[in-house]
Image 1: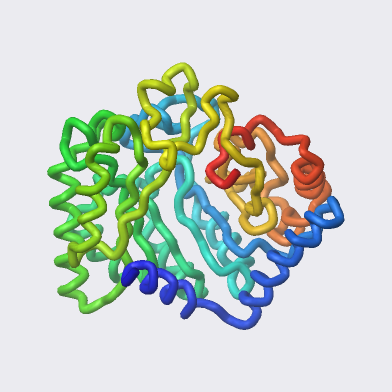
Image 2: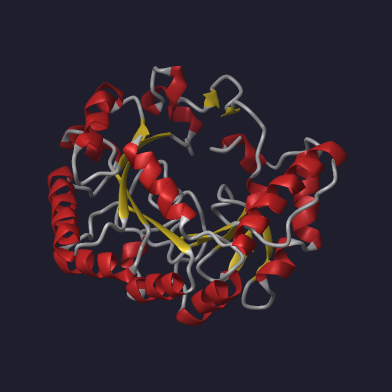
Length: 328
């Protein structure tokens, strides 16, 4: 409960009246869209996901990058594109997620990017596998003004952890978390808040209670459990947990259990090259709405391609990516 409040508060203190109004209009737009079956959106997304890179040093088997499921070119977002996004988002969007299909700590300008977004009063959120959290980088992240750091933590033993986080070392990760906590104490900063995120799978569900107990540690603000997204349905028995509450799928139909989604009315996803895609489940960029290098965020958000996509979802004509959705 303590951790939830801290995270909520870190989000709340970044709010302004303009941002709050944007959140309200996004929610009303969603409700009016449900009633009218026509896409009605706010003027701006409330949250923007920015893919700093789609390169990664891990080979997680059900990750689009690590498992080599996609065919997108790999690269890193340049400074001009990032600043264009942040400058347009400032004062309108509230949250900036600095990750998508890659390990953001690989980006050489990550710290400068966080600092720039922090100066623009955006709530910054970074997710990492934690393998690159060395002492000096930890100091830089803490000093950058980052609001929330999410660290993937998918097992309490190396055998369990390494089954999914291929190339990962749990002992090194535990040491990195302690170093990060030490540097945070030394700095006197209460940011970033640290969330341990565990994907629940057959291989680690017997360790969940032990992982939950890590929330009692002073170095962790919250432990967050997440369902596994399968990218190979021939391996459901190998990966999906036996506890149905940690399973997002109807495995007979091989799709997510429900079909309700608000993300098309709330959030925008921008790939490393500036392409704006339909949502966080469009990992291969198959449903592009436009490019931030050619158009504005506001223009793309309300463009004909985006609204046609929303209209199809409202009418029940779901693209294939909706069948494997965390939010559905």
